[in-house]
Image 1 (cartoon, rainbow, N blue to C red):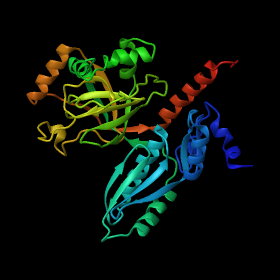
Image 2: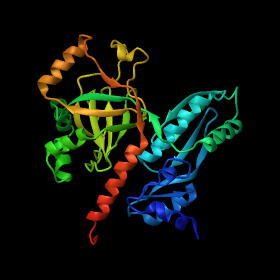
Image 3: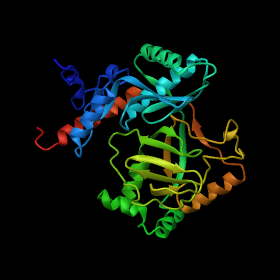
Length: 340
């Protein structure tokens, strides 16, 4: 039997084998397969323009990025289970303290590694990284802070920005294309926790994925990027939530504005005592809708140095997500046309 047949049991909707999903070469239940990069590219060409599969590589792929960097790729899709593997590998690498490694940069599907070529070589480092990969077993839990962030959804700055760039009210547009109401879009976005899968582009800009597999609100990017976006704006493209920490160009749909800083180069609040950037990969965010009056009340507290950030240290049990995913997949099967 071929490789695909061997993993047929892991491809059934609703089936969860977390020993497969959360270790080397694992599958995403119902939608995934495990391929080499070459097989993945071939399948992608065959399936376009149909929906693409979520693909995990059988083994991580190590690619050089110049003389000082390399990247470790685990798959080729935006997927939470794939990101869990990236973060778990990063955690294991940090615990090992390989000589010459100066920085790691976890992203949605890969881990960037910066190293000192006067201390180690690309070949030696790849060998050590492969040893770590071989030792990694099932991923059960990851360190994760929970942060509550107040958001004035559909705020006046977002509306003004959209209008200035010839775009409709972004939340009204999202409601229209998702066949729902603005209130339902806000409630859906605030109802799920969001997993920070990558931090980058600029300080405190992050990407976050919904921890509720049933979250269905999607949004396209602007056809032409905006020349400016107000600071502290929460935004969405696809099912990915992101954040504009400072005034900058961008193309994500504008959701709302927070009165608190997630990037403070002056480090005035004690939450920034270890650095000016608050978001970290593997954080979980809950966005709490607030009105205009509450926005200004919290903003005044922050500017006076009196605001208390709601941060809870802890960890995230990955089985919790797998359980939600299994329930979601079963419901999809039951609701599919022709299902009994």
